[in-house]
Amino acid sequence: MILDVVKVFIPTAVSFLLGIALSPLLTHYLYRYRMWKKSGGKIDYAGKEAVIFNSLHKETESGTPRLGGIIVWGSAALTVILFWLLARILPTDSFLKLDFLSRSQTWLPLFTLCLGAVIGLVIVFLAYFVLNILLTFFTGENITTLTLPQLETGTGGGD
Image (cartoon, rainbow, N blue to C red; front, side):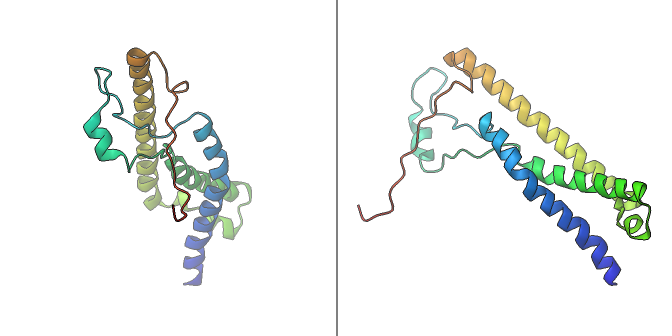
């Protein structure tokens, strides 16, 4: 029974640690290339201010990074590859038991995870490029040169 717990806990811990280790690197690129959800609807298609949208969403606008799911499926995929390689390079009993890719129950969830990740990645990149094309067409600016208004934040004091 302890072996079953270890076979689950070690890959989970390795995947978690890989996710923590990869997060700063991914975050750097997401912020460098401004891959966050844009504040939509500030200007309508006629070039005028979208008054109703702005009044409804003035409190909820945020710069949420996209592609953060790469950490989830990337750390899971790297963990699967790591334990598969360890079982092939060092075929000890311990590594062979930790190689969960060899189990038939692993293939369908792993395939589904990878397929969902690829579909999500394609959707985000298509949305990013389509938005870039629309912005260039309507405003003459693309996403990287677009200046976003800074939100005013309170000091939290007793003003």
